[in-house]
Image (cartoon, rainbow, N blue to C red; front, side, top):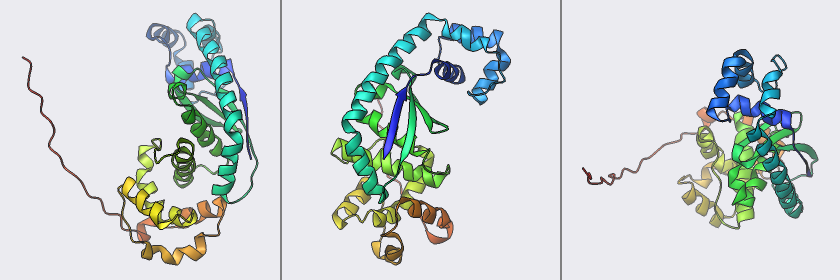
Length: 272
């Protein structure tokens, strides 16, 4: 079961704001001029203790920062209420897709939604707050799970791709009751394609759903080419599957061919 404790943390939010330069330009320039070394350190590692703490104290005294704190408190109440309403359904989904029961206790540090920040920061903690959640509550739910799962899996491209398949793709379809999914990281697109045939076997997708997804992702492959993997994969849980994917040499096993559709751009007449 995924258990999430929702908290706010002014110090972490302030550090992240400096790290991302999410401040009014004039004040960011002021901090840069006065605390340049600390500013650079926080951009490299927002959790660093090798800084002049006055850079954080000055930021926390600003009226715009206090507004962010108020927004964070409101965001926490909204997100926590939404999570409590749907957590049983989500955990049932996760147990089914993991093919095992599990326990993961996480702290979600909620930011103001306008900061648009989502990041696992280690020690079973992540920060979250995004403006999209204000109009799409499922967006919050999906990425609460996404950031949580970074504390479950080892950190590499294969596991990150599997996290996206679980949360950004499968969970979002489940919650939105449609084929709609959220965008994953663009640099993982090719890995998503390579893993897709194995993922279909792992989830025991029906022929109908496989064809729908192949069309949706604009991917085509012959299922008979992967039948040899069925006996190995179909009874795996998520841990075994992720390890199996990490051991596969995709370069030797797969030949991924790309095709392109070229359309002429619409040229608008000049108004000059």
